[in-house]
Length: 256
Image (cartoon, rainbow, N blue to C red; front, side, top):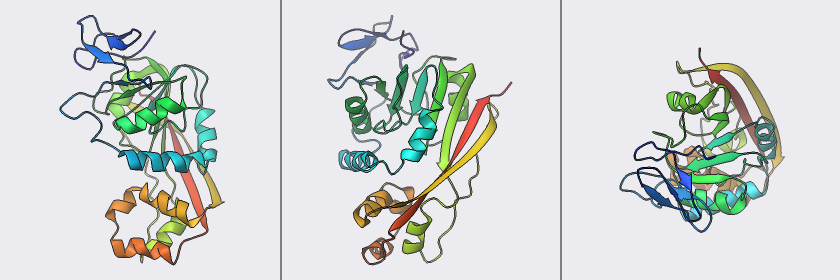
């Protein structure tokens, strides 16, 4: 049975062949790719999150498996009913069990639905996830804003949240090439009253990567939009051949 709830009234969403509908008769059409748009407000999801071009570039980059060491670590932690929070194009959703995923970008969700027919995807944001209270065994959350109270709400009492943040040396070669005074990431774990941090695992790999993929990778990072065109151009003549991919996996449970 679906754990999705109506974003309007909070009632259970029942799936039919072409739509999801709640007892109050709020109805949400299922797209041809199989996802459902549960994003409320005046914006449809097309103008929020990643653009179509950005989503396709991210999808193509992940298809080359530069992040495979992280994917393997995430997938082996999945059990029971899984929710991928801010799922992007669904790269990490290689799971045979019951799995849901959502993103604010409709284009990302569209790509995810095309790639992973076993998962149930929906368009939504983090403010109020349209998922039942105490319904998720494993939530995964990679490189997105941390909404601890909302994450705790949807987790079962013995559920786990695995949140991924960049390690201190993540992309350090790229930073050295672009910035005069590069900095390392602080690896500060998010803190909230509703969730308790119970483990912290760092994984790292250094990989050969072509210049064109380095530039695509840079465009996928938050740094890109805060970097001057002059500094971006440094990669044309000083592009690193190896890149460090370093991540910290934070495991949370509900606070008692």
